[in-house]
Length: 380
Image (tube, helix red, strand yellow):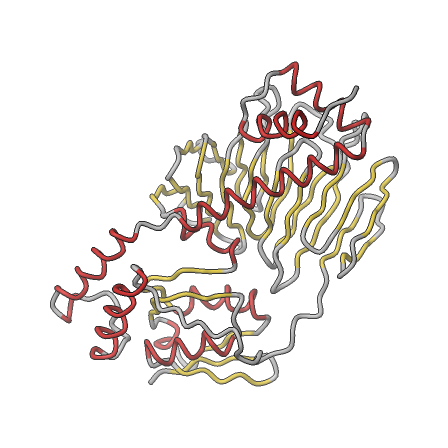
């Protein structure tokens, strides 16, 4: 079997977009199983396509709508504005200036040369194989063998070949604080894992379903296979798909949020009716209240993959877990009233913690003290 690079690229693209025929899909599987060069090319193309799609989603911000939101804020009486923590004169000037210059209402202070407030997190990504062997994924690329399966691991991506084995034994991938990581499973499904997340997965999908287990947050690009549903198990819910794009946030012990970007999914919980979603809809499950359905802005949900979180009038207590995961600090509040204070702006992982704290002080007059990995927020 001899294919040129253009032919392989075309087949990989068709698989990624779900337009590949069953015959070509089987042909591609055989080619990848017998030729290491094809497999490496496949992984490069899939990673590139996923990165392009993520970039397009994050950059697809409607500037006209953003300006309308800003104008509504500026035209409304002061008591009706949704950023009560900003000093009024400063907030009008800052928001209007940003809207005119960038078409956005978020406060984004660019300062790549700012010194880091804290040392980088020394924790490494860890892969625990079903055999019990533990492998640290560090700064150098490496090849890991698990039985007859060869895994290629780098600082950004873990990928491996499908084999004839039907074993469904689970392997565990642990992502530490401050880090994000990409995985390409045996069926071609691409997953981006956020910091402080865990993924349990088999090296081969041997049963009628393709099943993985998630704690934390991940973005899924599921390879289409109508005959074998893909199921994501979280501590509270199960999400079932055939081939689609969605984000799952399952950090806390009491809530799971599933945001559907393309395709269709159904999510369920123990003793609860199955909940179906359409693109642009979000299912939020909480232990006490069951399921609720919301709409969402795609760029806000997936922006974490580009190292950015967007906030609009978000309480500090809801921002704190993200700050802890991304900057490896423990957050405290001087009082419950401080925890309830709201912030409109962004957290940019590419900048230092000091930049974020500067934004808080400048826009909302919120202070923070950091000592030995402990950060305490206080009011004006």
